[in-house]
Amino acid sequence: MKSLLYEQVARIGKATASPKRLEIIDLLCQSEKTVDTLASEAGISVKLASAHLKELRVARLVEGRKDGRNIYYRLSDANVAEFWVVLRALAAERLLELQAALGSIVAAPRELVPAERRELMARAQTGELVVIDVRPEPEYRTGHLPYARSLPLRELKLRLDELPKNKPIVAYCRGPFCLMAPQAVEMLQAAGFRAARLEDGVAEWRSRGLPIEIETERSSI
Image (cartoon, rainbow, N blue to C red):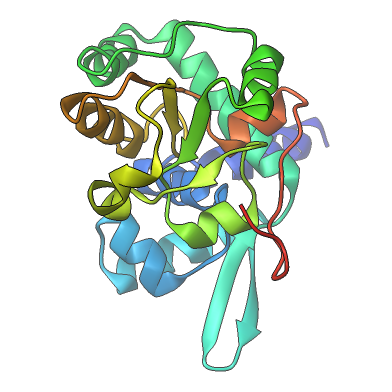
């Protein structure tokens, strides 16, 4: 019986013992997605994405819903996102190779000067600084940091005039492994803005017990 218990827990380890399956979990922390979208964003074939999703479904980490001809996949529970955040944080704490890789991401556009996160929210609320979410808009609508504006990376260059030059700009995306926010900061700094990157994404923010805003059809930024 004791072996059976450990065997069942090991199913989670087996399902997540793949870099691409971890990446899929990270992507699904942002919003539900079709297999085509997941394949495109993870840089793999649809066939391989489907195979990875099957393994994650067997372990009951993801689930799907049918909408017409499409099946949308999502995390089966908020605890799956929490599991990913904790696992990644443990890896970053213990693995020197991961620390070095993360250092290369934050070396060019520097990290946001560490401020208390609730203080960051308060400053965004009063307009002292501007927080931008550079993820695709569907992910923003699913959930975003309070007072953040949606400004997807691929639209940023054409929409720079929407941002004030006299206030700091804080960009965030999908979390520590995401490269969109560093790219946004580099672009903003080149255009003369005071910009910095926030390492947290929605999953990290939520795991700290901080509020997340969800857009509705009637809401506006």
